[in-house]
Amino acid sequence: MELIIDGYNLIRQSAVFKQAEAESLEAGRNALITYLEAYRKIKKHKITVVFDGEKSFHFSIQREKVKGITVIYSGLGEKADDVIKRMLLHKQDVIVVSSDREIMDFAERHQATAVSAQEFLPKLEMALYCNLKGEVEEEIPSTIAPVKKGPARRLSKRKRKKQKALKKL
Image (tube, rainbow, N blue to C red; front, side):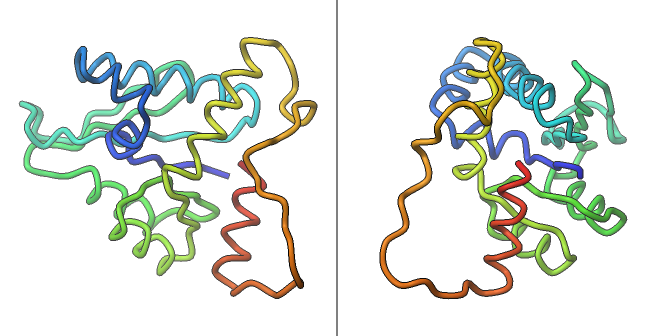
């Protein structure tokens, strides 16, 4: 399974990453990559982070590997959203992390699972915590998920697919 992450979208949804980004864009990106590195150590998923590079001086897409994570900067005049959409056309078994409604809808139309940044952030925080403590994630009780009450009902196909993807995260 592969995760494709809308980098700046995720950074701007988290107080921790926003605070780091206030220092500089590079500090925000490095903070995100530190969390993603801890997550990758636990889950072993292939992770690609896409950042906007439309105001940069590079005419083409820039790729680099940082701590085992593929980092992509979009080219001059191109948004990260465009790069993510192009990637979705050629990939299978992908989870897209973005709170951008346009990206989420595009992902679901192309048989990918879309997860909002708010749903993914607790997973990142738990991974960093486990990495620092040296514990396995399954041993720590989750207080994030609410206790279900009331009669059971079957979720829509889209919501069941999303829940299945969230369990893999």
